[in-house]
Image (tube, rainbow, N blue to C red; front, side, top):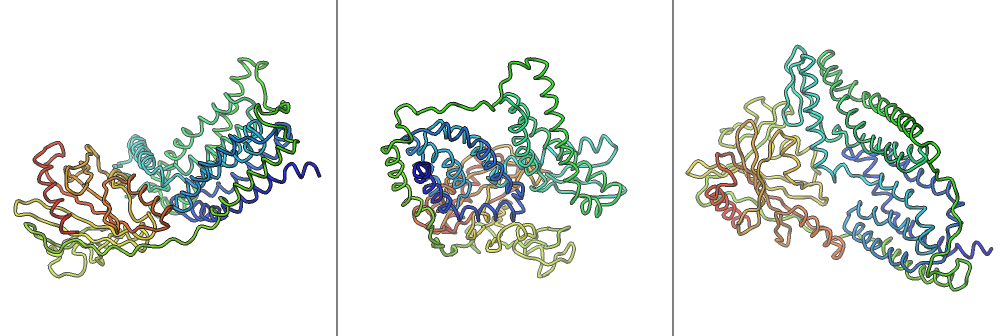
Length: 537
């Protein structure tokens, strides 16, 4: 009974915390299980392993328990605020970080730092439940390009005529094939899964932290090497057995074979670490099995004193309203879609609409002038639409895109698109993420000195040199060329004003001999951007 009285405040606060984050579990599950981009099915086992580690260490946790700590309670405050911003602003990763931090901070507040410290690793392991594939899209692009470049070198070494086009591998041999290494095949997914498995194995079977860290460091190169080997094997099978079999049946099941091979290599690396450690100092190693003596935190009171329990109940009384507020996130107000549009007439420029072919193998874009009244693709006879097929398949269904070409009397052509974002942030993205995957080499980036903020990127590809400029604005005409500033504004509006903004992105691309470093070229481009921005308003 005395033990129950001592632990009841913490159990009450822990139960309230679990209830407060009930919506997070659903959001996490929807993303890690049903999102093709994230696809983290292994994440369901992560909380079970963390709970197992805490249960296995329950004896030491009980002995380490001391009096309540005001510093632990203070640590809960910023974590709860981060959770608030995450849940209200639909920033799931921020909400998860707040929750994971509370797994340590809450025991710290009720039982002192010595107890909380023993929960640091089980809590840190929960970081593997955070979906990062879409957040680390810049890493995804680099991994895709690295995998493709390595595969091309190996395939050409085997005598297979293969060429790289962005993140695609193209071969025109006896069995021609074209394979695009998409985001799910970047290797980031297998990197997370193998890292989670390696960290768990190292924690269980390596007795010291230096040896555990050494094994954990092996996870990344093994996962990357395994993914490159898989891509190479898919290309070889496609060249020998045909594209349908290579990119179909073999593609779907080759991942399991490569992952098993990576696990075997991880076990081999663990064995090698054991041999190296045994050869150096087998007697000097210390394991983690020695229980710690119970300690009382300096400046705190004994866990068995009445004043200590009163302090715990005060913590509970202060935390419960905040956790209740966290649990009752109201439905946000959704702003109306933006009414602005690209101008059909612009002083000094001829205007034409752009339509895209919906056939996957064609995907060409045409102006109305080039179509000359034809309502089908001149190249393949496919249907035409204002959005490309890839945009329709990848972007949320409530995303709209309008494209136009503005041509000056001096031969300058500006390809302009306006993306009307939907209710989620998935409609808009940074062009820096898609340009490299399309085979473009970015050479220069800078902010332009225009009345409306634009960020410009100079890049090159097989067609020559090009420049792309972009800006974002919302229904209140808040304008920025910074992706970070847009996300920050969006989170604040969702969190503090309980409102989902509707954003639009305007991109302007032009092929020319001009360079961003040339002030005359920037002046001409800036003139067009200012003229366009004024007309869009």
